[in-house]
Amino acid sequence: MDTHNNKKHPKGLYLLFTIEMWERFSYYGMRGILMLYLTKSLFEGGLAFGVKTASLIYGFYTGFVYFTPLIGGWLADRYLGQRKAINIGAFTMMVGQIVLFAANSRAGLYSGLILLIAGNGFFKPNISTLVGKLYKDNDPKRDSAFSIFYMGVNLGAFLAPLIIGLLSDNIFADRNEAGEIISYGYRYGFLAAGTGMFIGQTVFIALAKKYLGNLGLEPAGSGKILAKTREKTAPEKLTSIEKQRIGVIFIFFLFAIFFWAGFEQAGSSLTLYADNYIERSLNLPVVGQYIIPTAWFQSVGPLFIVLLAPLFSMFWVSKRGRNVPVPIKMGTGMVILGAGFFFMLAAVAQRGGDIDDVNIKASLWWLVLTYFVHTVGELCLSPVGLSVVTKLSPPKFASLLMAVWFLSSFFANILAGWLASYVETLGAGKIFLYISVFVITCGLALIALNKIILKMMHGVR
Image 1 (cartoon, rainbow, N blue to C red):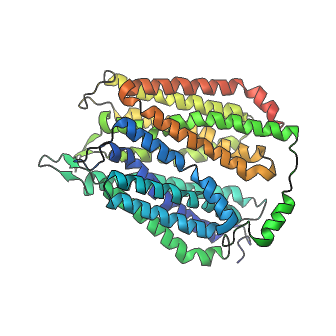
Image 2: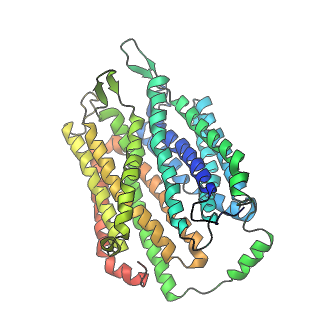
């Protein structure tokens, strides 16, 4: 099978796009209701964890999702091959979602989350690797392919909270005579997430041979391939320039931890705030009063990414965009993220401060504006960071240093969960303020280090 024979993208790309969309549907759908499921009472269909414990569980779960791909990628390269690893990962994640659906208990929760973490480790790094393998080295279509693939990520992330929020808060929710929800259908949300994973995997198994041929069937570390790789990657000393460039990667890695720790409040503290203190009631012409499912707010960020990413892409390749140094791009992204929390502070102020009365609500537009500004910050930092790591990395350490970059999300999510765990004791307003001030300070520090970092980058832009 020739995957490189014309100017069009190979059909295998669209197969991988579809599988990734369903896997992200499964992940983001489940993530959109996880904090709610953890904190609601048993009577309401939850597990009755306190906010502190729930935030830590959420943080460690989302953190380890970014750690296990290091192991899964290594196993695939050395023993399994990408295709087998993807099959193992998808099946394991599907079982994890089914466990969450079937066992509405704390034991079921821990079992399900462990299966999801393990399955993600096999799936996440290897499907991205297959996208790259569809193209020859230096094929100009490769960058475009990853942009298309990334749209699959955001399409799944956009659709999942909408559908799963509808299932948990409407279709499978139990209501009293007044129409108020007394119990949520979170377990059916997990079932839907597992179903999405099943659909994606069924498509993959049915069409992989036709559209991918033998791609990813053999581990890269087997037989002659391993011998050749060892010949090519014989130990060589790093030059002083390479060492400084690697040092820059670790500087960006450190700042990225603090960025993502703020950004990932979306699924924890911001979700809880939306559930309790944001006015989600709408008066619709035909339907009448409708309560927006809390999970739906998780779709706002992916929607803004789909709308704004093309604009940012055009700006970064423009003459003006190319002249903006990487540290200033990323530092500005951090400042913008911190500024986004100003809108949540406005929501707190509208309610009269951190008061417990859930009947006093803030406008939902404060939350929407927060997500909008955070998305702008993300587009200044995330794609820029990915790109510069590939440019700064010595070829023999490219994969390892990319894994290090992704590892920033492991530390960040754990830190994010720890921060969210103090919402009850300190109040949401103080948490939002502290995160805002700290992230803005970090962003300004990164901008101030611009000249030093550029010198260490030795011409890489």
